[in-house]
Length: 89
Image (cartoon, rainbow, N blue to C red; front, side, top):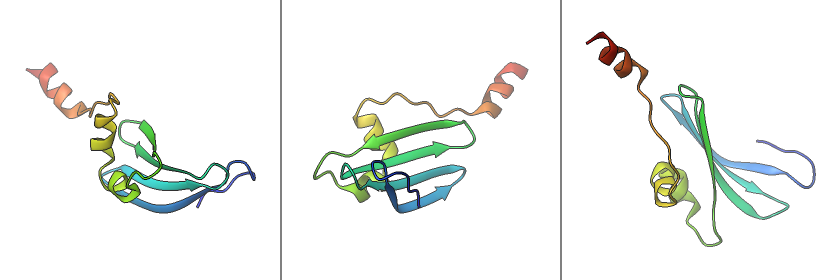
């Protein structure tokens, strides 16, 4: 759980990790905002989605890449091992 000053308290509601990708669902007390964060340790990538009121938080938490794409967020999954193979060819 992450907590800061009275103005920025964030409560972690859920979190999951798979293959180096961590997805977390937060609620910020002072603003009543719900956010979903995605961190990819392998690529050092990170993005955060701020949910609109009434947006299904668990759906965004379960499918953050689909929601990011629907919002026009440009992200790329990198596969360094494929680049090495291309260079060798």
